[in-house]
Image (cartoon, rainbow over all chains, first blue to last red; front, side):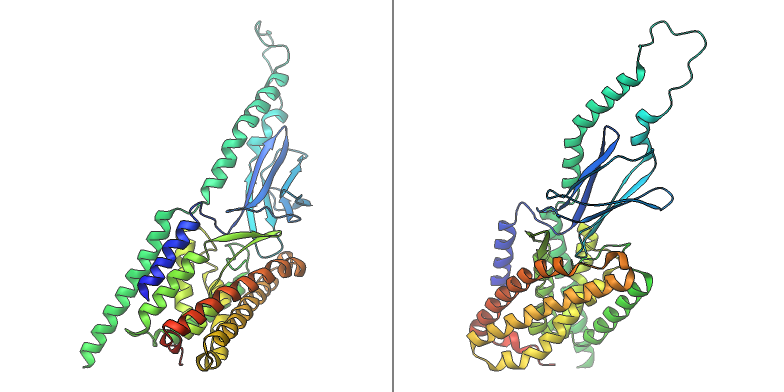
Length: 186
Length: 203
C-alpha cells in the first residue's frame, strides 16, 4: 500500500511540475507617477472584483477600489508617501505590497536650487529629461519585477521533497519512541 | 482560503486557534503507536503535497484539503497530521503563517475529525460503492465546515475581512464536488484492496 501511495505522489508531482501553488500575491509598481499593478494567484488565476485598499504612511485609508477582470488596478497618489496596498479577494485571501516614497518622489521632488552662476552646460529642461528617463526605466524593469514576483512564490521540487523527508523523519522518531516505550514496558 | 496569512487575525482568535489545535493534538498524541504512526505520516505527506496544488476557479483559486479522507482513515490523528503539513508549508513556501498555525490547523482538522467520526461506522459497514458515496458526502461536509470556520475566524477578527458569501459559494461548491469525488474514489478503492486501512478509525 505504501509503495502504491508513493507512486501516486510521484504521478501527482509529475503532473504538477510547473508547480501551481495557492497564495494570493500583489504586484505593484510605479508608472508615470501612478501606482499600477495587479493581484494574482500563484499557479494561475486573477481575482476579479477584489477589494484594493491603499493606506498612507500614517495608516489612514486614502483610496479603495475593486480590481478589474485581469485583477489589475491603477491609482495616482496625490503626493509621494510610503503607501501600503492591501488586496482582499473576499474569500479569505489577502496580500500586501508597499510602494516607498522614493519611488514616487523622483519627479515631484523640487529641483535643487541652482547656484547663482548658471552652469553653462545645464540642459534646458532637466525635469522633462528626468521624466523621460523615469518612464523608460519603469517600462524596462516592469517585466523583471513581474518575473521576480512570480518566481518568489514558486514551489520548488526540492522543497516538496524536503518536506516529505521531514515527515518521514518525524514518523521515524515516533516509531523509535514507541518501540522504546514498548521494550521498557515489556 | 484555508491558509490564513499572518497579520490578518486578531490576537484572541489566534490564541483560541492555538488552544483548540493544541487540545486536539494533545488528545490524539496518546493514540500514536507503531501501527498508527506510518498511516498518519502518509496522510500528512499527502495533505502537504496536494494542498500545495491549486487550480484557478472563477474569481479565486482552490486546492484539495483531504480532511474528510483523513478523518475517515486516521480519526483524530488528523490533527497532528494537518499540523505537521501546515507547519512545513508555512516554513518552506510561506503559505499561511506561523502565528496562524493554530487557527488553520483547527479550521482544517476539526471538521474532518467530526464528520469522519460521524460517517466512519456507516462507511465501515457499507460495501465499496456505497462507502465511496458516504465518504464523498463526508468530504464535502468537511470542506463546507472548513469554509464556515475560516469565515468565522475572519469575521471575529475584523469586519474588514468578512468574506463575501457569493464568492465563498462560487469557490467552495466546486471544491466540495472535487473533494467528494477524490475522497469517494479513494475510499471505495481502499475498501476493495485494503479494508483495514479504514478500520483504523475505531476510536
